[in-house]
Length: 122
Length: 486
Image (tube, rainbow over all chains, first blue to last red; front, side, top):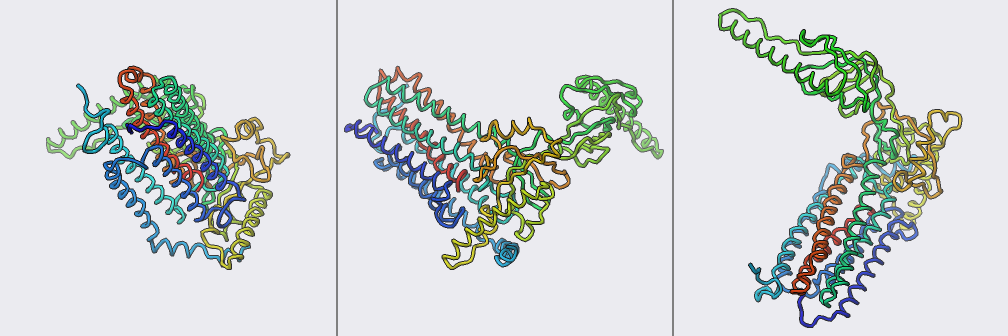
């Protein structure tokens, strides 16, 4: 960023604010993850915790990418370049859906655990 | 040679070259880590079927690392802020301030790696898990390296055609018994061996003799065959037996054995050691029991309770489990649904802290010094650190019979898929931290000349190095919740 209109004071201020926000989000992640009182969703770990955890991580990552890495005001060439990577990355993540497409696994789960059996024991 | 567009942007891209370069590099880095994150997701989704060792979710041993991970997150964030401030300092033409910020960044990187090594050390050295035959898992610490089989050897038999027998590496360090060759090829019978070096020399010369004999025998065979006679088959005696004058100690690594019993060890390399088994039980400090792989109906009769041998510990486990079950039931009753199987089989109900009280009467087998070192001196590195009721302090050392063990290991990559992917990604990330810090350190120490000649060039370098550094931070931002919390 070799802009002619470089405003050091303003830049420093925004960097500092982002730093503080990142600290706060980290503390929030830990508290939500460890303190039972702030556990969202069902007691113990469940999908809600994962969604919240990843949402916070996503927010933090966006702050770093947008402000620290200047992606909020970058030249077009870089966005074009990163577009391909983003698509590939998304494909990699979507691929994990295949892990849930296993009819045999479904049977295994149903055979081995049924809620009925468990409540009988208790 | 002057490299073009170091400072002045190219007209077509509007960017100086290094910036395009680093973004192409970062694009490939995203793919690299993306592949590994994808692998993480696959492994994690697959673990529920119960083939692998359980994910260490919910182990208090694991929860202790959350603090290390959280501190490391803060350290990396601080360093990221440091880099951008250093960049601003160059923009403002303030060398002193720039250098201060950059040294701060490098110090953060060092702190990060130091904390990481503490974590690696405790995973690799202090924490162990034992999976029993019914798939129940005990988490804790193996005492005195008793995962090794303690054996008193008298006689070693092996074949001279093979490589150096592994058993010589399992001897108690510094000890080498006086060995005499009792039987074998005529040339070596009666030889005496007194040291490891002498054994190596003897082995190689003995092996050469056997090989020569084999060559001679084959020659004879061909000659007899060519002469039209029915030749005698080729036969060379190459098996030797060494006898020790006094019994020697062997600490056998069970992974190198085919089998063992009260009088013999059979190594995978074909070597047999005869003597007397000293002890076969693994001494273990149990901290937690993980029943995620045991059906709820079978948990009360699990073999783990025989091994632990404490009614109190068992009671505690199931009391705690019922308590949590009530919590779950209340939550799902309010929502009018049944508790999902995933929850019933999951870590919340099936992983509990277990405290085995020291029985005063049978205190003989417990060495209190070991307890101290394992339990009190470095709680963070070893035990779970106790449960919410404050059950900390010495636990009785239990003896785990080897025939009840299906698998045991430290918390290294081999322990389960979680540890495999954990070490892969965090090590790769660690390497990035080291190299990133080295590059930034280079700009800090050797940047003065460039700063005086062309400060904008240095600013661009710092910006590019900083972009890499932010990426490293970004990876950790995702790694922290994925590896430690979720």
